[in-house]
Length: 626
Image (cartoon, rainbow, N blue to C red):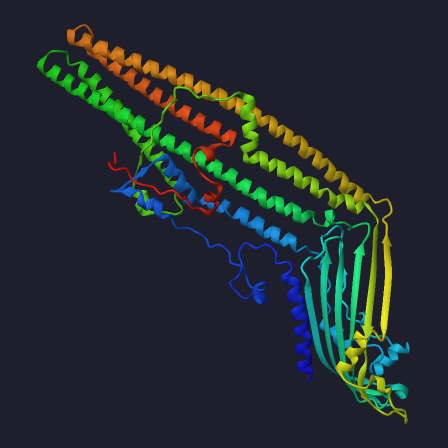
């Protein structure tokens, strides 16, 4: 009978709790694939670690060569870069913190089992009669409250627990008490069988209070002949409302962490966008460095071929006696120098390829390690840049740069957090009201020829009927006021937060000014790189003309063989200077797009692709690989 009653008691409260929970499902990254009643108590799915390279990487490898366009390099970096994979967890963590913030978080007092065993219900049994008569306390010697209510404490401006909490403690005890005074119990040894069921539902209020609904039942069967109701049950139901009126009061105060977490969730996407933008700029620079290194390698190869022909021609001329033998060591030295230059250029290409491979892959891949990267895009310098005025570029940067948005969110959250130190300046004033309805019923016994009041005859249903009829209502109300003398701690906390907020405002303005300086510097760098490229290209064209003229002179016997070697050496230097100038222009263009926040937009990269780690566009090898 008692087991069935316990199941009914708990089932009723579980249904009530499920209704409360269903009203506020909360935001989750993932939901367990389980029925709704138990979903909240199962571990939510967490994204698995991804350490395998995407299929796109192997699809671009043909015959030991990795053919890459700039767009493919960016796509591979988004899908496989480990640093970006680490950064991808930032928004997920922010979502979890938002979910946690929505739940609130005050300290929660929980009634222990020992409190339930030793507690008594006023007016029920010998011990209850002694408590009612003022002959004993209701805690069996322990310093706990007889009603078994949970104690909830809130320190400072902590948000109340906004998720409803259902607590149930059921205890079963067999107790024996020696009775030195048998006037009440009429027995030397009082033996009791006690069952207690205490269920508490607590809901915090965002305005700074809480509501607590408690259902308590005690079943008592004892061997006392003086007990007029034996066995007996004593249920009661109480409703308590407590609220802060000064310190800790207000929705704006108590939901600030929720609002901050919401902004942080949005800011986390901007932080990731900043990391994605930086990665894209880095990969673009690595790609153009590899293109530049390959271009220089081709120049060195052509220079070696020309020098080799000079060396062979010199050897033939020496053998026929057309030129003195002293020219041969000079040609051999020149040939050896060009071979050394080619070897250095090959090492540079290998180094740049390794750096790019690291940026576009997750783990070690033998197929990738052995592959030679073949860039399919080439550096070009447009005829003009067509850049808008500086003021318009600054406006573009402020609208598109992730760090500008992050600074704005930081100022917003700092301002919201100020309420956390402003409100504690107030004294503490809280009010509390409780309404409680009791009931008592049991089996009537005749004691000293006097029968028990038949009104209390019955079982749990009779006692519960008394509760719902409000036969024995109790109303409690009170207020608690506390004010610190001098209040220096709260004053100091408020001053620190206000000064830090002012400092943050100045830092934001400084960062804005720095953005203007960065854009101006990048504009100058772009113009300078264009001027250097124009000068390098003109120098290369002129040097080609000089070499062509000296070759004509050499055919007529006017120029010497040494003149051709010097001209060829100068031409190679001019060609490499042009390649470096073109690479510097490409880097300057990338840097300008980066400081303007337009790198992702101009390279058709979406934030969702970065977050998912998958790029929608397919990569295709060219019909004829170079």
